[in-house]
Length: 235
Ligand code: ATP
Image (cartoon, rainbow, N blue to C red; front, top):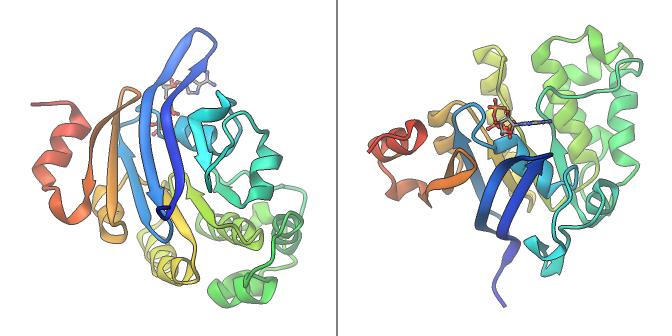
């Protein structure tokens, strides 16, 4: 069959009576980096939460490695090899950097990512390994969140708002680390506010608007004008 790793079929999401996603259809192929862009409130985080099991769905709304996973719990989905780097990091504040990383490894599958390899990727974390995670800068905390996800050795890594609120130099460091992560055979879905950054690392892009896919295509085939139109909802 195809190399499709993740397939969403008519995916809806609700918060109580409020519908945040409407019938999304999309596929991600093994080894791709796919970007998800869209204005505030477009549904990007909801999409990440749906895939990672923090919001439950119909079982067949989400297939991963050809298995229906839409109704599984977050821990079951993590065990299948999907890791989320959540918006706002969500580190364990009372734990050290290293303890946060080790927790990521608790659900680890077999793979190349170890504490040593995370420290090689982000050397500053090794220097700070015994410090409380909350004492780090926002950028370093984002590195811990990424490292924690890598420690699980996922096949699919979801980055929610990868560079939001970080200094440009840190954003550059994180983006420089991305090819190394993906070269190791991982597939990535990146939610990113910075459209140019998103396009610079992805082969395909999806633009969400008000819970629907307003535009999708190969990064090289889509013009900036099309993206701007889809992003802001203008014709
Ligand atoms: P942002 O860039 O602001 O994070 P987003 O594209 O990630 O935006 P979501 O956070 O997925 O968007 O939100 C999609 C819609 O769902 C918004 O209208 C938001 O107000 C609503 N929403 C998100 N979380 C909840 C919640 N817990 N309860 C009710 N409505 C919510």
